Image (spheres, rainbow, N blue to C red):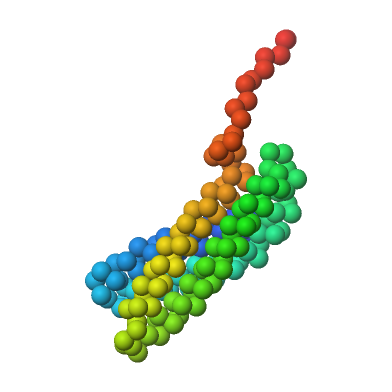
Length: 158
């Protein structure tokens, strides 16, 4: 198993954890339920952990695919830039989620404020997750690139 395979195995978890955590945190805020909010916090922590693994395997994956036909350095570089920003957001989100979990357990007065701050950071993270996921898909899936050139088959004489 190489880094490209490992990267493909772990790179979906940070994005999915962020999406599900965001929805669950909204539910926790609406219902004013700390258990639901703590579930969201747990997902954000897991997303941050998988972001670390995804970043750790990304360089090795890049080395394996960057010279393949139809890939190019520009596409990989764009994906890498978005992924680095998303990882930083997820690391901050994971750390704040641990703090939010602690505040919920202690029933601290600022627990709701921290929940709202975490929700705003998660919303920003969703924007970067969209860009990261799309640019990562474009590495090997040329059909989703905006500037895809449709090739017209050329008939060869028999």
